[in-house]
Each structure stands twice: as C-alpha cells, then as structure tokens.
Length: 198
Image (cartoon, rainbow, N blue to C red; front, side):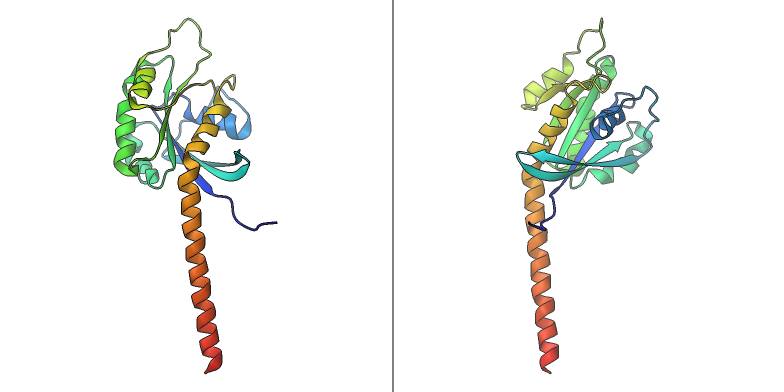
C-alpha cells in the first residue's frame, strides 16, 4: 500500500452575501441544510475526501464572506486556488450583476485558475431564472450548474466538477513537493554520511 499523500485541492466559493455559499458547502460536506446559517465573516475552511476518477483527493473548500467590508480578509486566500466557483442566487438579480466583479477580483489575485458558475436556490418556484449567469458562462466557455443547497439537487455534481478541473494543478504541485522533499532527504543523508566519515 502506498504512503503517498492525497493531492490537496483548493476550491474557493465566491459571490454576494446571502446567495447560499455556506449552505452549499454544508450540504456537500455534512449532507445537511439549515435555513439559519450565520453570515460568514472573512473566510471559513472545510475539508472533504473526494474520489476523482478512482483517485482520492483532499478538497479544501474555502467559504468567503460576500460583503465588501471583508474584501481585505478574503483576497489573500485566493492565491494558490485550483478552482473558483462563482455563486449567484436565482432570486437575486443583483447577485447575477455582480458575477463579473467576483470574477475580476479572483483573477486579479489568483491568475488564471479555472472557474465554474453556479445558480443556487434552483428549487424556488414562480421566479424566472436570470439569464445573466448563463450568458457569462456561455460567452467565456465556463461550465454552469443549477444547484439547490436546500434539496441537494446538483450539489455533488458541482463539487465533483470543481475537483476534476482542479486535479491536474494539484497533482503537479504534489509531485513538485515530493521531488523537493526527496532532494532535501538525499542532501540530509549525504551530510550525515560526511559527518560520520570525519
């Protein structure tokens, strides 16, 4: 059996306050839903072991506070992200209008990591789905998901897609880390041998 560690995949959820980022994470990680989620202040971290095409990966899912006053707290955590999920709510046109803002903010701090778009609260009836999220995804060639933290519809598909598109970068980073640790180990052994021979 291999002692090789699982690749660690950093996924960040971004979007306006109240769109349900925390609820989506809670549904995926804990298989639970609560109507009374507390507002995220700054950044929260959740982890889950996921299976991606037969390989185990450790998903680090970062939940960011959506209010402008938390910008200075959240943006440093964008660095090193393997994937971002831009979340908007079916019942909030403002959250759709702000998707490009979230995308720009992420790209400014994280470079060209892959992005997904998700419309949460898809279970809400009598509210037409806003077209803006679909249009942004279509124009940019980004995958779009209709999800519901409340009913769990599409939630696993969303996070599995995030894991799949982020895995190549995470595996590459793990390989580099293992190579570096092997080099350090060889150097340490060489130093020990030299000191023994004196």
